Length: 113
Length: 113
Image 1 (cartoon, each protein chain N blue to C red):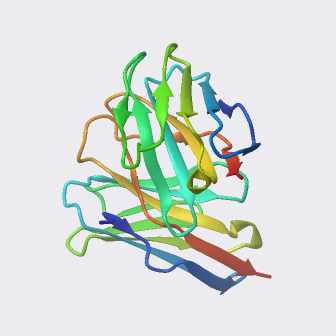
Image 2 (tube, rainbow over the protein chains, first blue to last red; image 1 turned 60 degrees about the horizontal axis):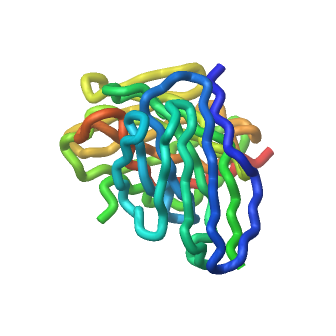
């Protein structure tokens, strides 16, 4: 079974705080993705990584950064959290060079007060 | 501009009847399409996919139809069960390297007993 874990299921932070969301996989997949899900907007890609230390901007990278120091871990960082970053954050993994499915973690519901 | 659209935000059907969820896309480079199912507070789970070389793919109660000329796909669930109540996301890929997906906004399906 594919296993993608995320560091927290629910998180409450204050405006201006630095927030770290971590994603860990046990499938040795090359690609890792961070999305946010908002009602009516579907899943929007924030950043993705296709290899260690490599990263690419997705559709909505503003206000976020990422880190991938090891193949199995992909971190999403909110340098200074704002209320409009309240959302469900989803990590996904996938194989390189394939139009194959992505496998998702359980998600982190982040609330920024 | 959304390249993948699910125009019905919600759908309600009676248990035992057919559920039809629709999805339209604009990018003619898409060649692989997927449906994901998402329960509240969980990550999306892969349901079924179809390659552009096919027009139909069936897996148990789930069938996906692809009409390339109309840039339209649909997911049929027969018979619908209360456990099918969830948000369904359509996704597409193929116009980029790796396995990046573009998601629709989702349709909330409610199956009434």
